[in-house]
Image (cartoon, rainbow, N blue to C red):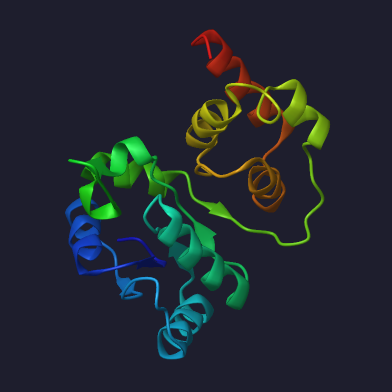
Length: 181
């Protein structure tokens, strides 16, 4: 049983979570997240803690940002887009139980205002921005680090917010370079 309450977008996501682990969920009902749902999430965060596990798409990121901005200290789990896609449909409901368990095993807690351990220059040197393959490299790095895919500016912020260490960053970078990216 997972102690924290997992925040997902819909009923099908809850079904997928329950196939993978024993946990309670709160469903946002999609991207039109309202004050009533935010109050439920805030209460869950206060009492048990919250893990946000939204779809790896634009709408899922929007929901994640709304919740994280309104309710500090949430934990975040990310499923790579490739593991959450079936027949062109992207969503937690499409992820295998193993992919869900893997994402939940790599949860990150956000620390807003935390000092950045990775500089902007590090991202340039690593080819994660201002590089022909920057988007693909960020996607792979985000998957390896368990912080999801995003643009360069948001990627830099996530490295800071989730306190990714230089060692973690270097190990992931070495892995993508070994794979020829």
